[in-house]
Image (cartoon, rainbow, N blue to C red; front, top):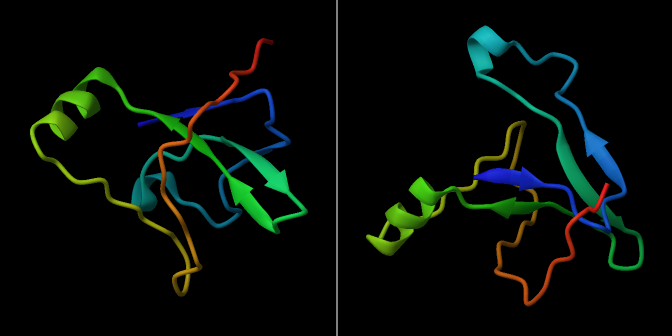
Length: 86
């Protein structure tokens, strides 16, 4: 899955200060939308062609959250996303 910058993107989150690429793997910046009215952070993801094939063949989507505990999360397919034009 590829994180996507949208027209609504408000922040680019970098890797955590204690991130160790050898131990934890590669960590790229994550474009997110901060919606203060709903008190949520949202990120948008584009499946690669390989991801699409896997999904067509019944693969599942896995969400991994680093840190202690599991915050409330939601995964959905939104109706419309306007991509960043810059």
